[in-house]
Length: 156
Image 1 (cartoon, rainbow, N blue to C red):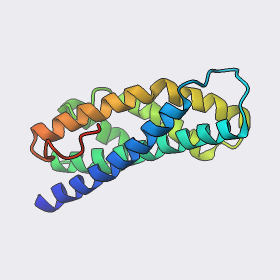
Image 2: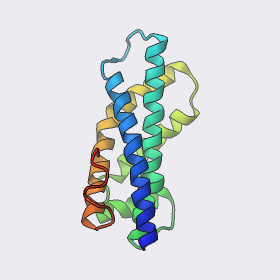
Image 3: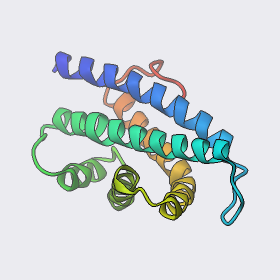
Image 4: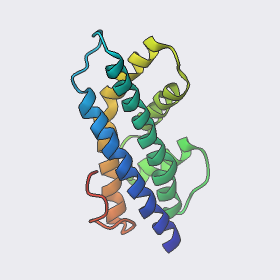
């Protein structure tokens, strides 16, 4: 169990770095509105923002939540299974939202049409704060379970 907790602690550090980078990108893109005209620099900022969202979500779902599921005594099954158990345990608030974010993440990874990239950007902009909130719920649970030190990773 100590080894799994150590892995969780390391992964939490990676998540905190990814959240910090995502927050930076979010702030750089906060003024962008749908239907606006965008420079190449703006489009680069949008692309970085969506890529960083995907990275945060990957670390969160594939590392943190799956490891928490193992610590809960499970660790088998699909992501849907893991999210369902995590919701039931209070590690996350809403499994359905995270599944929707995963679909959005997959669109980011596989969509190359510029107009779709803008649509995806605004969808990510709409859910970014909910992702941050979900990470905070998870952090509270991990601290309460004594799997994460309360002083470890204070940015989310």
